Image (cartoon, rainbow, N blue to C red; front, top):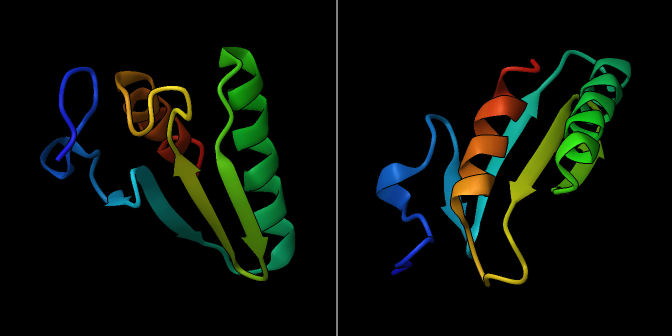
Length: 89
């Protein structure tokens, strides 16, 4: 279980899962163009905080994973970024 500045599954934002020490969520879209546009919005958000997620873009879906590599897991910043990311849909 995560401790200290780390978050655990009980405090994950709604619709996000704790998977392999990262907050993960797959966002569905009706087509590739909309999925790619969302991924670009997430990228712009990431640049504002200099904190970048792992993104997987496919037809009709974008998987987003937030973690802090230097901390070895999920921190308060990852939780905040996940919440902000979800607001971009």
